[in-house]
Image (cartoon, rainbow, N blue to C red; front, side, top):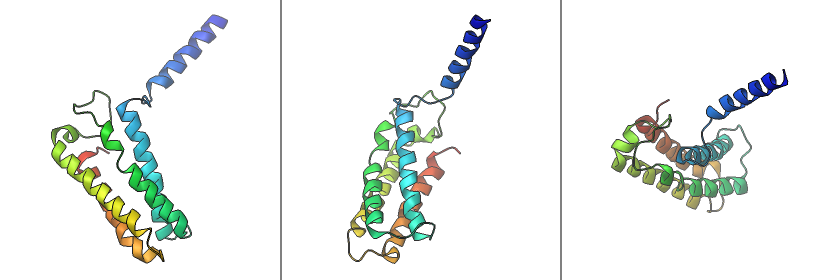
Length: 148
């Protein structure tokens, strides 16, 4: 009876492990970075939309973090298509030039936001269009290269 229970436990553990993405794989690394970017972006947008109180120092710190994060995921897109199931469309590998262009546009948008967030006084009105530019950059790339 103990052997059957142990076997069942092992099978369950293996099934759970098979369902996840290896965090050390390129896909796992970029998923982690994109989740961090999303969380940071949601906090910045939340400050502008009234979900969170606008806190200028916290906003500036978030803009800096978002700018740093925006430069990291691209290295985790291998030059050949992955065999793992992912949210990336095949076009990511077929249209590398366009994909890289959109990545640079996002980096430029986050850099502009970061620069603006160092200007005093920092107000929600001054950074709102720049946050919108970042969000638009994300949306453009997702529409072209992400399967939902």
